[in-house]
Every structure is written in C-alpha cells, then in structure tokens.
Length: 265
Image (tube, rainbow, N blue to C red; front, side):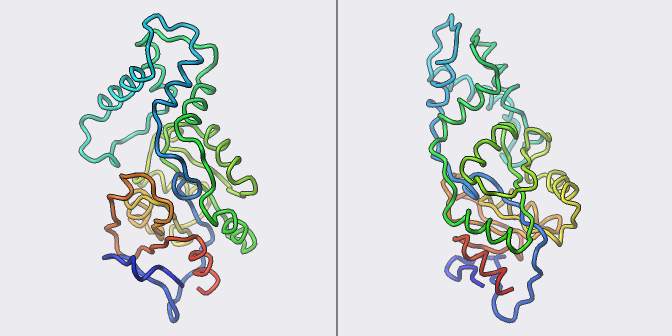
C-alpha cells in the first residue's frame, strides 16, 4: 500500500505488507479539493452575478461593496473565535445573504435558492472531479463499499447535490450531508456521529477522506473513525497551512493509492 514515504509526517502511518487492515464498510468524503476541485476563489464574480439579478438597487451597490458587506458580516459573526474550525453552529447562506441584502435595500427577481446557485457558480467555477475520483467511486461500488459526503458548507444540500451530480454523474453516494442543514460542522463530533447514525455503522467500520487536517483527519479520528489525509488537490491556503495532529492517520496524494490499499489490504 502506498501511503507516500516522502510525505510522511509525525503521526502519519503507512500500511504495507504485513499490515492487517480492516476493509471499511463505508468511506465518507469531504467535498471541496477532495472529490471535486474548484477555482479558488472569485468572490467578486459571485457578487457580480447576484447584482445582475437585482431589480432594485437604490444605493447603486457595486460588486466590491457587496463583497465588503459580506466580509463585514462574517467578521461580526465570528469575531470572537480564535479558531476558525471551532466556530460553533453553521449559518446557512440564505440567512446570511438576507441580512446583507436587506441592509443594502437590494431586491431581486429570483428567490434565494437561485441566488445561492448564481453566487456559488460564478464564485468558484469551473468545478471538475478530482483526478481518478470517478474511477475510485466505480471501484468502491464494485467492492460493495458504501460511500457518502460530509461537508462544511454554508450552501444547502440541493445546491451541493447539483454540483456533485454535474461533476460525478455516476456516483452512488448514499447521502450528502451539508453542515448548513445540521447546525453542527466539522470537527464537531456530533456531525460525524450523525453520519454514523444515518449509515447505521460504528466508527471502526468507516474511513473518512479529505484535504483538511483538522476537519477530515483529527476530527474523525477523535471518535474512532480512520482518517485519511488527501493532499492531491489542495487549493485552499488554510488546508495547506494545517497538518494533522492525531496519530495513526494515513496520507495519500493520489486516489489510485486508496484503491491499492483496499486491493492489497
């Protein structure tokens, strides 16, 4: 098995010949920079698309001013947090955006669902499947290994499902969980436990894969889920800065490595 030797860090493990590895019943994946990769990041593009749908803009708000208002709201809501990954309950984009739009007296020709999709599409497109993810999902399906998605996201499940279905049309994810619809967010243990409840599985039956050291490795491992740190598609500067602190996690840079782990485990 091929957890990369040259990328080994303190706490990371490499399973190879002679290693007994229990085949998972299910693998849970993060979304961004894990199963799909997005351009990182054009907030002005999202603001521009939203403003084009405005039917009333009495203040003449520009994309730059709208982006500044979003940033001010974010700063206000999370100003007391010293750790961006421990900010408590997730806030859905609809509530967040409504506060900003109404404070600026903006009115629109479409509803908040369409505005959300416009904003995210123009902010992060193009979005494509990460290399070898379609092949990995096909392999897991043949092996009878169940799959799901658990993501920290202020956008809702409907919006994320549309994006995943576009990038991975043949996926067989049993569920796609978005933190904005559950209040909890990674690395809060309640979020992982909700996923286990939905799957009717125990922590030892599940692996969790993702690019964020805290949310996708240390968080799952804290409740007994095997964490796998995927570093092959990192675009998020925050993910690049952080490294897992938990012992016993695995590290891979290519989804073909995960397939070999299972084949040779």
